[in-house]
Length: 489
Image 1 (cartoon, rainbow, N blue to C red):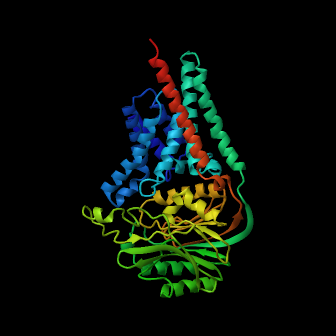
Image 2: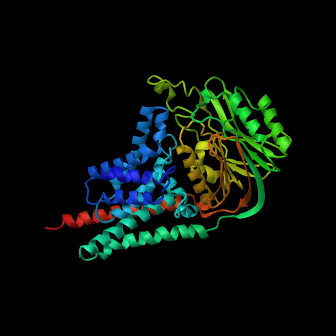
Image 3: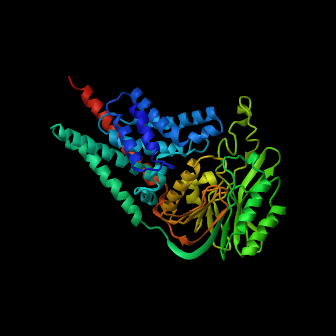
């Protein structure tokens, strides 16, 4: 069915496939299919397009629970279903499609369970020429620009077909596609030239990847082995460095990190390298809870700060409605719920103030905006993707890194226990990337930066306002047409 094909084409733009033009083609086809269709048909087209998209991009969900993964795909597809449903099928369809897709993306970034923005449209454009638009309006504007390019492409194709068939051009129908093309070019260009902050100091960093087999869950990977690998890999640091970044969840403790043997061992690494060291720590709290934090050791080996993860992974780090769900499925794989933190994500260190987003948080523009807005001069993204057999999540995180770099105007450092670890500059360029599964240290010189991008100043407001105007105008035009047609004899 064409709608399913449109969704699959869009999915092929998302890493690891990452062929960004197909995202535009897929959305163009999906939007064109809505023309002249009744509400029920439009909803079905949107749902099938969503299943084509998310059936590929979040297929890894099924590795943990097949039924749950399929349900998640259907929930995500439902957002595109609603977007297609509210898009008018007549005049204003193209404008309405742009606005509806942006608004549904905002909703899925927040609901349910705080949002699950994985496998989305913007990730497919992170390495393409439209990405700089994120500096102005964030991930939502990048999504909007992608759909603008799509409706512009569709308008050009339809116009060419009409001309080839000798049909008179409909100039009014060509106005919006022409404007869409101009906007899809102008907004990324504006993003390239928008304020992006300024360098204030250089920073020599080391990202430590302990290595090991992938596809293992925490219960299959002894905590002592993971820590031992990190300690061994840290001996590969050539130095000198100012800051050492360890991944998320490489120190798993049954109690507080302060006073633990692991804290002493990690502190010795910091002292030996005369550097600040940040490492991911999980601490059990009683029998049913734990904390997930990135902890700072200073160059004397003393713990000097921490950031507790704010945005937890639903059904990964906690189970919504655990008491009810436990009656239907076994929750032995997720025996404890993470305690949510409350910090901004900014931490002062001897190497300068840093912003931190832990793992899943890299997919949320608001978390990076909070960390950098509070004073972070470089964005750190410790993560743990060791549970995944394929590269879907690892490459998606790098795509999210690119978008966060454009949004914040900051260099981004990502460390993972088995990869990918990566270094990106403030314009989203991938400077270094580790090998999957390898014991490896990435050393690089990055920049501490200050200043505010337009996105740091305004957030999602401009993109949401623009989307609201487009969908509102399209609906109003549709209602006007109905009124005129109903008045005809």
